Length: 320
Ligand SMILES: Nc1ncnc2c1ncn2[C@@H]1O[C@H](COP(=O)(O)OP(=O)(O)OP(=O)(O)O)[C@@H](O)[C@H]1O
Image (cartoon, rainbow, N blue to C red; front, top):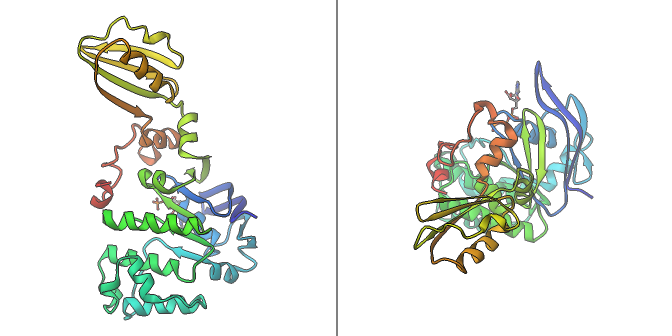
């Protein structure tokens, strides 16, 4: 039984088609990344999964349960980290967590969960006074309460520092290793690559690709480039005749070889090393930003892919 399944799921807000005929299946135990540019329909899809909003058309099953028929049963078994959790009640961090554990009918130790997210020293402070990143950590701990069968995380690393991001990834991997399905939305490609088995890419409400990151790279052309800096200009080495090589050019003492598939790079290096003194090697596959850009047509910004640093206004993300 899949952990998540949508059939012809559509949500319109007036003239805006936020989610358009979405057929998506996430298998049990998968870590699934849900990608897409701003306004692609990710949060709307998550809200539909949890029956926070109702579809215009189509259906949703979560853990085999119809989302509209029994949303309470789903929420008991799902841990959710929503976008922009607000801690408006005058409760301590530990009290928020005790409340979350209570609503799940679970018996977790709140202090254990707090220390899992690095808040053990701040348990007795008002959650409303926490910094943005600390609130995100607390929201993550709340999602983990009751050891849910499915974790739905909407932009989980928002506001986290690099240590917090690493910790979050470790927890996601540990939970997945214990059989939890993880579905998380993100536009941070390195994060998705680091933890996801498969990704789905949304654009303008439509699912434009579902695959592993490697699979996406392959379908985007799978190009790879290898540059070999040699002691003397590496001319006449016959690299062009190797299988999988598209083009080889020499710039001063550097041979730049474009391959139609990444696996050809090893043959290129071996071939050149047997014929010339190689001093340095630089290897590149298709950057994730390029892939994302190709699949989404540049999102609402069009044109060239943003660089990793441009793609975020969060310094913690830029440090990744
Ligand atoms: N309640 C609403 N009323 C009207 N339009 C909405 C509503 N919720 C979402 N939309 C529209 O639906 C589209 C998809 O929005 P959604 O929030 O799902 O995108 P997203 O992929 O989560 O984007 P982001 O990465 O910016 O969070 C957008 O055009 C948005 O303006």
